[in-house]
Length: 118
Image (cartoon, rainbow, N blue to C red; front, side):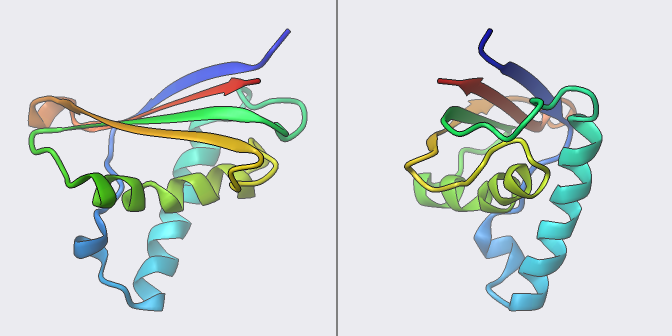
């Protein structure tokens, strides 16, 4: 049976303009996402890292980000999926990455992560 999991995390990854490009800022943002991913995938992760998967991120927010910023904002989340042992690697050889946006109110903002083994 192929692995499938969908989780909702009630926080948004910061857009690159919000983080800044300083190494320390990116480091702290990555650490926050490792904690969030490990907390939300406890008992829900695959038995071993997925070698090939479709990873879909749906950003729910009141304002639509630019396409390039939307993709860049999920980099620390994708890296966290790798570090937490959900995916084997975040390269295109291992992950078919899809990033979309869905308009929502402030109380419903967050990130939907869907992972499907292929």
